[in-house]
Image (tube, rainbow, N blue to C red; front, top):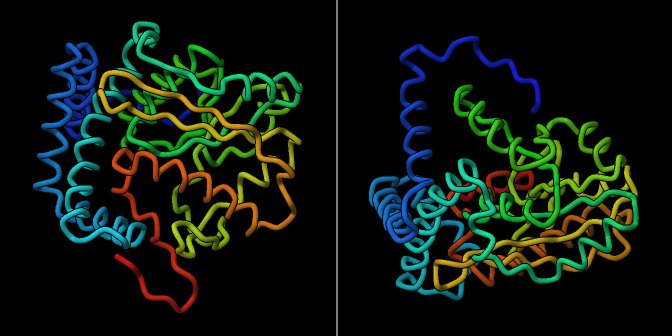
Length: 304
């Protein structure tokens, strides 16, 4: 587990809401499956009604990415996205607080030979994931097949950060802070599989602008940089909840060929194209609540 500067005690009242949240997640992880889905739907619908700012962000993202939808269709997808993310909270709790083995019978793994073959090359592997609402449960279930490390963003609340980091450290070989590039490179060079998701806006300093759903989008350069520094194959992977809401599918695809190309924009566009194609299969399960198009090219007005 990574070393973090956590307080010596979390007894102060300012941590009580986080303690309550952690307790709810631990309890939610053990709910019967149908009740877990019902609670998740309830959380999603409640957030859809009261979180006006996040609803606006989600609606804006979907309007930009799916201009072919009319207002009624888009409003329906906004609501479905909130419900999917509400269920995702219970799925995250399950991934963090329970042994993933109890869900093995719910998982279908397609194309796992692509990752096995890439790992057999002996250079380690960089796995490119996506911020679907099933993200953390997917990581837990993927660990049943391939021991992996994960790159993560520390939480702003120290208590929840400790809870999250400890949970992920039980699932993955190492949980690596996203700012620790040396740690990522070292683990890959040691032959490990390292998973990370490049599909968020981390600002102009670490990004190039590349198309994503036809929009010039701040896209981090890190994928190509890590591949160049390690010589490791880059394997795209997605994880989604099936329409029955009871089973899941992991899909692993062949490593990117001729990657990196030496053209940062072209490489970022290639990653974006993969992410976009995966989202189009299950658009309601993507985390549209984030401001994916926050950083704009110089002189362009903000979109939110």
